[in-house]
Image 1 (cartoon, chains in turn brown, cyan):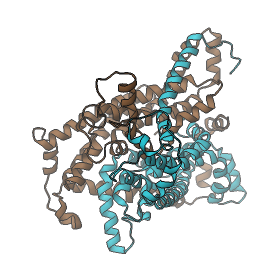
Image 2 (tube, rainbow over the protein chains, first blue to last red):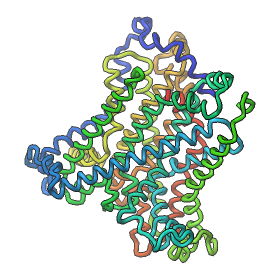
Image 3 (cartoon, chains in turn blue, red):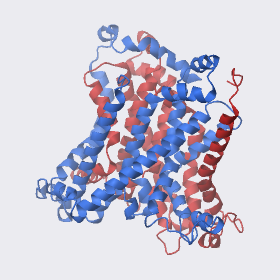
Length: 328
Length: 284
């Protein structure tokens, strides 16, 4: 493959190439050039991500209700008032936030675990060529390629109480339930959300693991086969350990995406998510745009960000201990 | 590969067969529902679910265009996603080239900062961004809020971090000797980038473009807040079918299919590049 051919030179040149002295003293002594190249990316990141984040943090300390929305700077300061409301778990607002947080944590753990498991299993099973592999690979990527709203809206149809496929199969055809269930309201909504999330998310894990598998040298398998290791042993001893660096990034990315996911629950349930599937993003959206209380919404967002920062930091610390933190 | 010293054991073959069959079913059922329901008459989708249509009809595919202004949404999405993709790829190529080929102060800070923006919950900067766009509009007269331009600007930054990250890895895998030679031959640094590095990294660039287009085409949250009647994109516009008194599920499925075809077809055609790009770039 082209990729393996292209990869080889990296190993040869990478250690010294980055700071090759010739380049610095050579003709291109334009110190400004790299900065110039970075400038557009930097400006846009500042405008769309970093400045808004800073403003969001400022807003979280303000009493920003609809009356001040035209001129948000004039809203009165409220100190830690918004935070106090958010984390007062005995009062309704805090209690609802805590509930939403736990729902999100449970949902995220299950979804990430299932996505990873299915994606890895599929990639490992499809590592060797067999008839129809290319077709199957393309098919498996369809859920990932579909626009979120198109995919999720199909699931909404399938989960309908009266005319949906799920109730038709479970109740009418398999007689597993006494009466048709509600899937998009009540406790079942958690499983509905989880199903959709896994259906949509596992192909990403599949894609990444598949790419990771291509970087495992063939010789390792040949050597193991000569030593008499069977297929299952090769998977356990070679494939899975070799995937560790890939998994470190993959699991983190899956975790962050799933935890912050807004699109799936929003299309699945509309503006008001059922309590059992009240993911934190939608919850904060609700708190901000439905109640028009942007100060509290911002405080909740900042708390969410802090939580994600801590989790990511701990995760990287914990997982990098074994292997030298190679690079970002 | 096919004539490996040891053929896979039966347990492996059977596990593979069972697992892949179940997984294919799981993946295919919604796709089947989408396709078959889009060809059903309305009675079939309002009554009990049926696996097979009572009769095939292409009516939904005609009606979708008049029930909601789908064509307008389609054009909006095409403009927004197309422009965001082009801008994002160009900007990412420059940034990745700088990081891959130059040593400069703040390099690490830059890559870490850009990557960590991936972690931000969209909800955190949705409202501030909305306020910034409104204020820029008031101060300069450049309408960002509600306009396609504002959405393009927003979306291109969504795909930027991942694109830069992936392209750095990809550019690193293009031998430096090649652009050194171009520099010696009198190309400027930009000449070396455009004539040597970019052509050698086409798979990576295509992969990044696919990713950027998909991101912009599928985004819901910002589209639902930052568009108005004239600039509405498909992500929001598609919900128009279900806010009516009757829910035309056959039309919804037909519309979903129509809006999915460009991205799914593009993605499947280019997925080889994506896997290759990920292999060389992201998953090193």
